[in-house]
Structures are given as structure tokens and as C-alpha cells.
Image 1 (cartoon, rainbow, N blue to C red):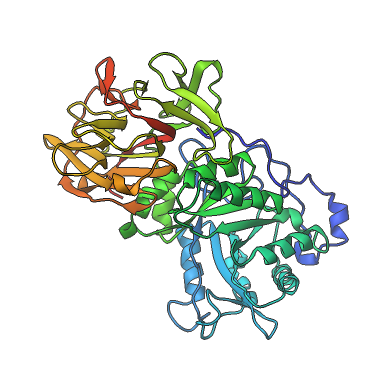
Image 2 (image 1 turned 90 degrees about the horizontal axis):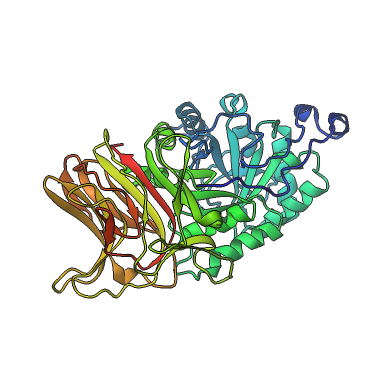
Length: 512
């Protein structure tokens, strides 16, 4: 469950008097007054209707690198790409920009490889873009220009094209390794010479993928973004410790985005579904119409997120289908403890459920019908990986002659310990597996398992696929409850998990 964010950074400014703005804002921006303060939603004040998950969370879709090296005349070209993205339902148009020695901003991914890049001013002037309600995601790719010169050129170009506007703010973004100076220069310019549009411009830092990374890595990136006065942070989907970064960013009041979710062949549909209630935007190569449908599909069976919970009253809260909230006991015999850890080295900042080996959290009979399969995800920190031969530990399970199980197992024989996701199809369980040798006891892991009834059972850890298992047919139903931290055995439980869980998700899953 994602609890309300009580504070947002500097772009949530009070309304500035229209009369004051009128004296300083160019004619094209006469309507560019500031948005009202927000208490919960990163996209408050945005007029575009963004995709909304079944739990009411708004999350926007960014068309990844939404341009080409030519403007018009060749296909596909930038005009065609943007026109198609708008028609398909992209919420944000991502443009990469660099300032050349001629003093002109161009749209390009890499200045050294672009033969004839379009001018930013020409792209912004496209009627199909200018008349739309899509937001601009401007990514800074400049490496040579003075940061202040670049910042002024960018803001002046945007202003001349009639951006930003009330309900249509602009998001300016850059990678932490290369563009912090330019983001800082933009922050200073917006606070001074361009203060009239400051409430309508958001600054986000992209964190370059680093692996392996310490548990402190993403927390330090979040804290630095807050200290610099940025509004959001963007994290690679495959970044180790992804959920620890998301949880800490939310707590510090930053908007959170992930990049870059791939195509269907790259299992992009799986990750869009698994991340939709955790982030504010997704940069993706997945077809926009299909991505929007995935974000809004009413297929969630269970969603537990304790990062912002304290276990008050001896309970944690979670969601099932529909708008209601449900609770489960913690901190009593047989139940996990809810631990809140704010130490710099923790792999799961905030709240997490601690399972010592004889605890479990029972939910309900979460059947997948009418869908043929299931999707599960979890954010996990293991306390034990070295299992005895034949030993099993269930992280999340509805097993018992049917349904699914996510577990850690050391099968009898020479096979090493594996993390598995399995579904019961055609009279037996079919498992996909990920080697436990690639896991450790120090970091948290984002685990996803999925089976849609039409081909293969898959498991992914931090975005990396495990060994899939081929099968087909609907998952066998049963009356067992979905249990977190153990496998159901009637009123009891077995195969107890040892470790920490912060987030657990269960969805009906069909072919997409």
C-alpha cells in the first residue's frame, strides 16, 4: 500500500498572484500561473488524464527517445514518431537535447553520431505537439557548453515556443554522472532570472545503472537530489536495490520514475504490471496503447507495501480487489515482526516484515479466475541462502495441489539451491528457476514471477531472467489461502522463510 506523501519539494509552491506574473511573463505564457500545493500526487496540477491503476494511483508513460535524427522527409522521422506517440497515448514526449557551437539546441542522443539532427525549436513548433496536452520530458545530453549558457538557451527556447503552461509543466532531466552541473545551473536560474516559470518546471536526476552497488548507493543518490533542490529521481529498472531507492525517495518527497522498460520480447509487460503502483512515471519502449492498458487493468488480487507502515496497533494493512483495506496481525506469536529501520546501511529502508523461521502472514483465497495464470512480485532481503539438501523456504505461496509458489529450494541431488516460481498446470508444478549463487545476504532483490497460461513460466531478479519452463493451460485452482513467509497447509503452515519482505504483489495474469 502506498500511503500519502505529505510533503513535496519546491515545485509545490503556493499560487502566485496573476497580477505579479503578468508583468514578467512573456505573452505566450500569460496563463502560466503556479499550481496549488499538493498533499499526495506527484502529478497534481497536470491537466492531462494520466493512466490510473485500480488503486487510484496515477502513473505516466514516457515515449523513450521519441525522435529520430531527421525532422521531416525521411521515414521514420521525428514528426512521424511524435505524431504516432501522441496518437497511441504517450503521456510524455522524451526529447534529448544538446547545445552546439552555433548556439542552437538540437534534438539528438549523441552529438558525435547525429548526421542532421532537428532543431529543438522546430520540434517544439510542430502543431501536433504544440496543440496536444502531452508533457515534455527534456533530457540533457550536452557535454561541452557552459552550464549557465546551456540553461539560458534551453529556457529561452522553451519560452519562445510557448512552454510551459498551466496544466502542462516541463520536466528537465539529466544523468548524475554527467549533468549535475547543468541541473544545478537550471535550479539557480529558475530561482532567480526565470522565477516566474519556476513552479511549472520540474528537475529530475537520472541515476546511471551501477552493479554491484552497496545498500547505501540509492539512498545517497536520493539524499543528494533533495539537497540540490530537485523534484524527482529516475532509477534504472535493473538497478540492484530498486525498491529501497523507491521507498526512500517517496519518504523524502521526491517523484519516482523508472527507465527503460523494454518491449514485449523483453518482458516489458511483466515489469509495467509489477511496478505500476510504486512509481510516478515509466520510460518505456513498449507500445503505448498496450502499456496504458497494462497500467489500468483491474487484475490485482493482493498488494502489500509496508515501507511506510509502523505496525501501529499490531497490524499491517494491505489491499485486495476493490477500494477496501484489510489488515493482518504482526508482532504476536506465529506472526512476523514489523521492523522500521532508518539506518544508512539497511537494504530495505523504512518498514519491513521480519521472518525468523516460524512465522507467516495468512491473507485469503486469492483465486486467479477468470485469468489462466498469475503474476507475483516481491522485494526481499534474504537472511539465509544455504539450505540443507531437500529443504524448501516459501516466500509467498498458495500451493497445495494448485495455484503458485515462490520459494527457495535445495532439491535432492547435485543441483544447487535455486529461487523458483512455480504454477500447477496439467497435474503438476512447472517451475522457472534463478540460481541462488547470484543472490546474497546483504542486498535487497526485486523478484517477479509470471505465467499467463500460454507458453512459459518465467522468473526475473532485478530484471534479469532465470530459466523459463515451457507449459500451457490454466493454473489449477484450489482453496488454500495466499500465505506470505510460508506455504499453506490447511490451518497451519510449513517451509518457513527466513528473511525480510517489504513489498508483495499478486495479480491475475493473461496473455498480453
